[in-house]
Length: 188
View (cartoon, rainbow, N blue to C red):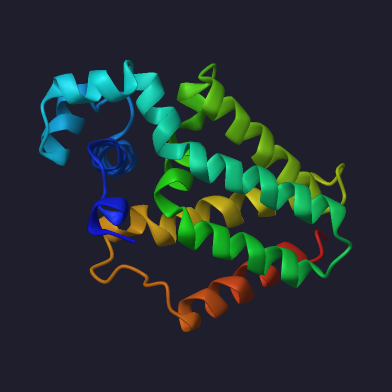
């Protein structure tokens, strides 16, 4: 494979810059010019490759949403242990941490954007799958705290925590243990 085949394209650079800016500054506060500047391109490049800010968002978080949908489908079809489900979800969080923070932290204000609505639907399906008891509000609350807490620890916490959590086995195992404990506790 040649260097040209593996080198990132302008579209890839812009998508990565958008993902970073949307996660750190917010979708609403990020302009197409901000994305272009962060990637080292002109705004016309953003418009050429994506056309609209919503299309940039779709390209930025689309791979994560597709991965989440596949993860949820696998988990719904599987009768595996809760720990395996949580471990798969933690792996997803590590791989797509920036996209997850956009959906979790900004999703309610971005409702109506198709990619955000898809992500919200997948998270609802995941919540039902993980909590197993669809009628227990305490389990839903625990899922919400687990999702928001894990997202904060992996991304938003970097603002306040000097050493960001790396992707090594120890942090992964710790997060699986913490989420398993939180989600398995009896509601009463």
